[in-house]
Amino acid sequence: MIRATLIALSTLLSFPAVAEIRVPSSQSEIGLGFAPVVKKAAPAVVNIYAKIITAGHSSPMFNDPFFQDFFRGFGSPQPRVQNSLGSGVILSDDGYVVSNYHVVGMASEIRVVTTDRREFTAQVVLGDEESDIAILRLDNARDLPNLALRDSDRIEVGELVLAIGNPFGVGQTVSSGIVSGLARSGTATGNARGYFIQTDAPINPGNSGGALIDVNGDLIGINTSILSRSGGSNGIGFAIPANLVAEFLRQARHGNTSFNRPWAGMAGQPMTADIAESLGLTIPEGVVISDLHPESPLAKAGFAVGDVVTEVDGQLVNSPSEMKFRMSVAGIGGTAKMTRFRQGERSELQVVLTEAPDDPPAQETVLGERTILPGLTVARLNPAVIARLGLPLSASGVVVLDPGPYGARAGVQPGDVLGAINGEEIESTADVERALTETGRWVRIDLQRRGQWVSLRFRL
Image 1 (cartoon, rainbow, N blue to C red):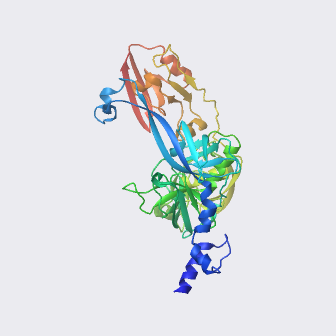
Image 2: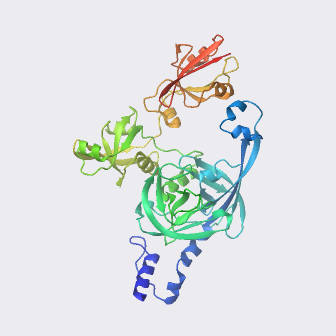
Image 3: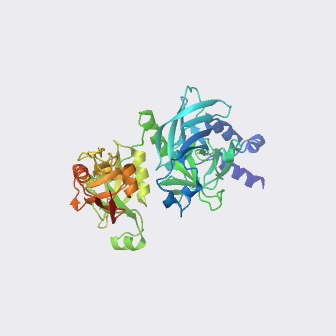
């Protein structure tokens, strides 16, 4: 019994390639458990109180799925104040803190409280809704405790971890578990989409933005969401890997206000057993390139439609979101070594990571008062606009960036690709402005929305 206890506790205190494996040398070490790790890491985990002002309506009919169409356009929205509670992790002694975008991204006021009850006001210096990460900067902060970032690519399933946060606002709480899965994508609830570490350490509301640490007290991930039917922890939680957090911190220190991720310029699909057999792969692995923009950095490196990307920088990739994660970690301006499988052979290609080119110029145009849809904002499609709106790589022509108040009433939505107005084909932003100035009593707009053609017809 004693021998089994010693073996189990030796695992608690160390991991291969992270720390020396040893048996606790005294009864006092055995009795400590996780206490030394928590004592080291907990001061760097903070509570975050955010105030978010949203537009709302006084009548509940505006939110009723049946009556809302009858009330649309009537009455002015009343601002509402929502209070958000979450956690954060101090990354540097001069006050850089990471949390979730859904906690602080839209906040008008942010208050950060440390474990020793010091309070700081904070501002979001870099936020990204897609990754659900926000970097905060605390005002007048110095000499703060902070956590070191561990290389999250070295994490293994089965490692013991601790989750530290402020669940339900009860105060700082520590829960333990293991890493129960890696490379999870598209399974978490919430705003984040991408690549996650899975853990069974209990994560509850208020833990969002808190720390997931290893037994040495190093940060391996930021707790972001859970998979649950009841809203409580069911033992499946997700954390954003520390390597992506490190790239966010680097860009925040360089003054970026939005996260710049490399542009792949490709569409892909996960490998299936049938596709693998048809391509000559013995194991279904990698991402099959199904579409490739001519200006894509992968195309310039030698990739083509039908190729399979199996690895990025030595790490296996089995979904487009994993590829995006690996490229985001490498960062713009760097290179990524990608393994290509084509016609039974593997080769390694160096891909230069760049932003989506803003060429030809987008010519963003806001329609004026002389047009029938003032405030409508349109732009010419190019790779940068396509990436920004998540449109198909083959999209061309003119796209709606903002419908404006009158366009929204007419049914126009952001991301609509304009095909024709009153039968006149739209090829430039100038065509849109002219067509919506010279019109009769009826207006017909033919547009493409999520791959389907839609016709809007309204009377002036």
